Length: 106
Image (cartoon, rainbow, N blue to C red):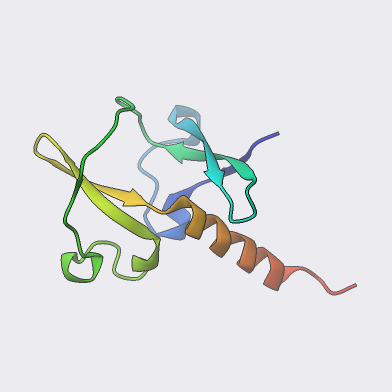
């Protein structure tokens, strides 16, 4: 069983297409305790998976994701495209913290 998250909800971005037309990218996120967490992330499309070279980037100055800057790890360039690198570990920690707050007390 793999948990799946739609990051559009986290960043308040409206969905561009129907769920049946999306892809799921499965990733392993290293945890601070040495374990890994397997997570599926919904993607509108996936063109290619490749290594990226990071470029100097300051999310505070870029205007990128102004309400969730803490989730941006860096940036990269592929051709003329500017790509934000998200910190999935911090995103997962945030999701877990929100779940813990909403758990009913027994």
